[in-house]
Image 1 (cartoon, helix red, strand yellow):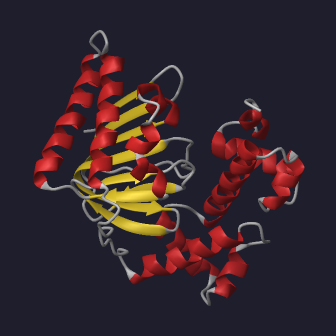
Image 2 (spheres, rainbow, N blue to C red):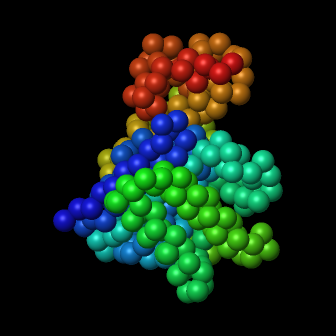
Length: 280
């Protein structure tokens, strides 16, 4: 049996998803322009973030910055329950102009892992259950209730992220996962080069079959999906932050033609490249 609740506000700046299921793999191409708070309420999941595969346990919270590639897949316990919140900076700013000071830990790293004490986890669990209840009942004013609860959840997570505390030690699930993390890091550093599965296999002294099979197993992405997603993520950053022509951005991102770039960009983001220049 699958329980699935979804909510998105009119502006698309706040998205909340609750899911309780036996097994699920997140869609392959996954990054967005908002912060994500992923709270694993029960079960165990393997979480691939940027270039690492980590095992997330019940009660863990993963906070991911905008435009960071990530995906969750099944661990050895396929049953799980999770709450995912995607919140844009505009939602935070609407609550308080000093949001960057209040929520500073959210802005410091590409991702953070939060492990709470039992007492703090009970408070977070209460917030999460309140959000889920409002999404189910949809009583008058539920949108405001959910937004306020999401901001409370963000603050509660930030209070757990003391910059002086060491990061939780989360080892890769296996040596194979660590090896594929090396491959992912290489792609992140050389995405603009003429990369191919065979060239990468030669670089890491493995067969193309081995690389293709185990990269997919470790990350949830095929080699081509991951390479295209990294390239499009970098192109999106340039579109949003510069006035470079689309052709030059395509070249800088590693694409041989503007036509191919536009086709892949639309497939990954759902929009044409110039969509991200509307505000300029």
